[in-house]
Length: 296
Image (tube, rainbow, N blue to C red):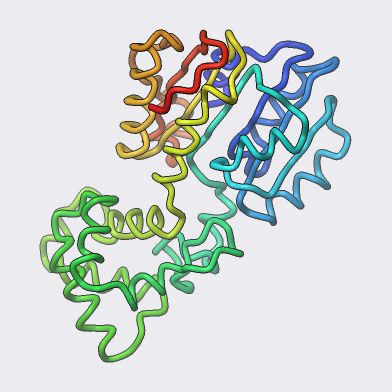
């Protein structure tokens, strides 16, 4: 949603912008020229490959550009290390790079067979295979239901446990086939693939996506300058609900104001050009308070 990001982040010369999920720099390339002269762009990413790519690709950026291999839940620490007090703009695009989705070695998709990994940060310890092969059945069902809203979470977890007793589940295709087996003939009537919600749930759990998002939302009072704008793009209902509720709490206590009352959606042209943007929702918050430390 590049046009909506530029419109609502409204970058100006001399400002400092924090990009919490810089990825391959798609937003950075659009925003940095508008910060010149004198601006600064800080990009965070959990994937060291993205960081290295941008360090090489954007070495001639029009403004000072710092790209750091850190999760956005560590944003406060990063800004402190860079001697930045607060920022004028904050962008959190909660999706992940197409290069990650399309790489079967990352295990994020069941469209191609690959190792059951799902780590956005390849240096993290726990993989999806670890969860699938070692998590107790009830806990596994809870993960699949809570993070995937999967109504067949219990039979799927039961099927997983039965299968792993025979041999560890190691690949995305193995897991996707298990989900399809649970759905049986009903799979043909589903709008989405039977493995979609289970894969989403495991990815969220592996990367602690909701916990880290809550940490970022709670840190907004210590990250934003007065009149600073925070733009969040979410891709599933759990993320959007967390952002919506935090924004409303900040607006209710007078710390900030909602710039848009309802989330913005991609244009029809963008949805046709990029099918992965279909579920995107963009929300905007303008910070008002100074020194506010309330946790949402």
